[in-house]
Image 1 (cartoon, rainbow, N blue to C red):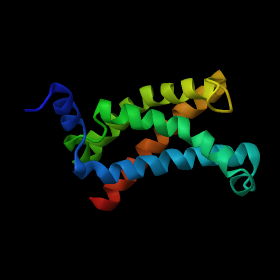
Image 2: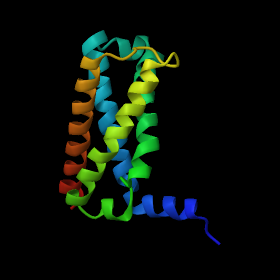
Image 3: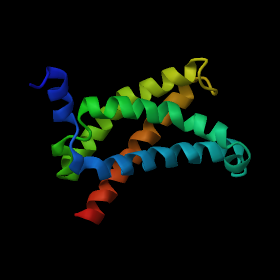
Length: 140
């Protein structure tokens, strides 16, 4: 017998949408890495890899929590860009808030500034939209 929690998650996560998860993580990691390089230089990626990863983790945690709950990896998301892109944007709203909250905490460096929040919210959304759009153009 299935519980309502299992049914909820079963409706939100479909194995056919797994490639979208890879695309999303790569898109978010790329945006965050570009920001790290712009602020610290390309050498930072090799001289401070932990610092670089600590920049990525809050937003990837936020994405891992929010995307399944919103249905970004549901069966419908894997069918078309028309379905997948709005789900990614809807998931990015709470995911970015989780990322901002984690950065503002003492768990991660960087803190939170409104200007950073605006830039990260917009560039993260654009990265997810472009990533999913390209995915469906390539995969069909």
